[in-house]
Amino acid sequence: MTTTFPLPFRRVTRDTGGRLGRANFSVYGLLVAWVLGSIFPFYWSFLVASRDSSMLTEAIPPLVPGGNFFANAQRVFDTVEFWKALGNSIIVSGSVTVSTVLFSTLAGFAFAKLRFRGRNVLFVLVVATLAVPTQLGIIPLYMAMAEFGWANQLQAVIVPNLVTAIGVFWMRQYTVQAVPYELIEAARADGCSMLRVVWHVCLPAVRPAAAFLGMFTFMTSWNDFLWPLVALNADNPTVQVALEKLQSGYYVDYSLVLAGTTLATIPILVVFVVLGRHIVAGIMQGAVKG
Image (cartoon, rainbow, N blue to C red; front, side, top):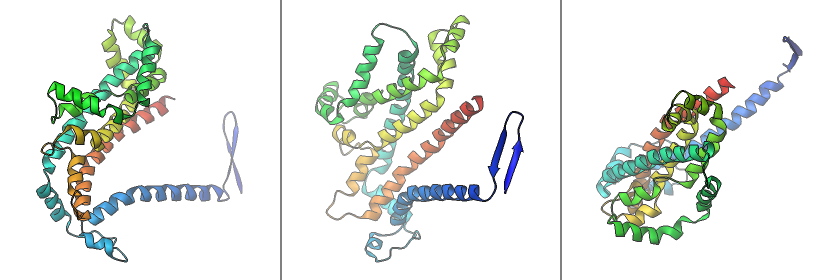
């Protein structure tokens, strides 16, 4: 059966014989499978964290959480200084995220919309730093931090990551399309300084990109392991260094490790929920305007 819908300027024909329903079912089936596959590692971590490690040796492991999660979580806090590690990671990741979004937005706006001598050369140099492996700079970076007296302090982890080349590149590419020159000229004609132009014109337009950069930066900083391991000592760890201590013995208690991993995942989920709303809101706003 074929149904024809009259429109003012064209005729659109839709097949109602069921093929559209089958296509929707397959799409939703793939989406459900993808969501379940994405959630399963988190559920498995919580499942093991709520039991003891003996479940891993069972032929058919249980798929229902047990009642030992809070006991295993208490063991995590008793084994390592997990509260201090959580606080350090929140301070480091929060500071790095705010500074990276701020400086990357300012630099991206300058590279995208301002005209100054050497702009292209400077931008190429910024992008070229992405080709340098992080491991090559660990020794000289640690020597610099020790020279400043920041060894074993949180400044040694925060300051080198205040701005990133990928953040500048991302914000520059988004600002080129999101902020028209006409808006900048109109704001300047109304007497706005360049900082007010950035605040009132640029930031509202690049909010989805800034939210994504903030979420990506927070996750990267929260999950960073190598540099905090080098720069900080055992008495002042971040979350990832503290989790490494849980599995440093001869016998690894996976229920203990995954309980700590589950606790360490909660702040990332909170940040994802908060910033994800801004990303969706920005996308919907752009879709409505389009």
